[in-house]
Image (tube, rainbow, N blue to C red):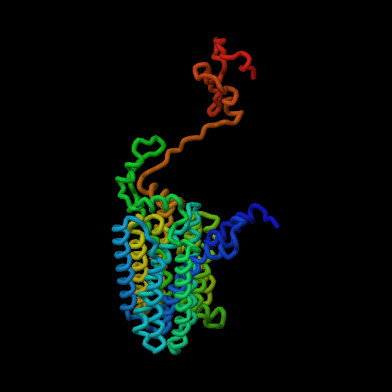
Length: 511
């Protein structure tokens, strides 16, 4: 059955977001289902590892906020040092080789081994030791997973939705880990984590086997221009070498570079706005008390469950709308909801805040992928992983810093402070996104625009009969035609020239 055009277009965008076009899309009829499956197999271990990374963070978050283990900061510190060391080594390797070698699966394998060792320590009830290995594992998987998702995208403009989908997997894993973790029964939690990590290790090994026998090729991007530059070792050229390729071309205009301005100013502000309210203990406690009062039940996972739902909803929206529009719309909605929450807040009747808090967590989820997308698309190719690692470290700093809200004795003052900071950051981030964020396209095109290489808007030559009559002037020398301007966009070629009876072939000139 043939679908309507609009429905078919939405379906194709959905398949593109899932990065499974070879498996479910309309490919060549000669391609068997098994070949389609093997071509798409790479996305399963990468997506699973992003989910597992969030799963491990959910374990730690519940241990900190529910069981009161707020003050040990060493776990996050070790994770931050590990991801920065990995990113620095990765950058040096790329600088030496002058091309991407697609080592993501090997790095993910190491991260899974660290997570596996952390789950083994959890089985022996050594939670303090297990968190060190868990944080190293989740940091490594986070960096390599998001980096690979961005590189694998084509130039069709689907990168925002795919990054948002990967972010929704990470948030979904965090919500699942928050639900499952129980500090009183660490063996059960360790057994679940052990099974997940073993399954993902098997998928990664199977994927490498398929690569070895030639069934798949995951060591390439679907962006053809990026692939060509990578093969020629031209993807990490400095700005001056890139500009030299456009000197003398009239269809391009060279301007000042604004890449680092866009990256540092926009990326840091969007990342701060993303995390400030999400990890606030005051907001979380208010959500738990409001849930107990409104639903007459205790659902501790609800904040992160709503956040994960918002991330999934955002990935669906980005299939159709631009990141600028989505961020603008939900940023305004979030500002309105936070103001409404402050107006209705009552410590004695917290259930009145329930619906507003639910919507706030959903809007946070919708807007959460903007920072990751910003970094992956706007950073220089050589430093992408290093900048992404810095963004993750900033998120960990916010996570650990928000714990000090627990010292506040007045709930209203703590809530007001957190909401005002979020409001200020959102009000600043919305116009910044509208002003600085480039249109999503090929990574090379985005880089060129940020470096100041702008294509000139040259109007295409009109060939319609109501614009011009060029089709009447075939085989006529230019000196025998006279252009006549009839309007702003209507130019007719007069033949013969006014006052002239020159003809080359009288018989052939009869129209």
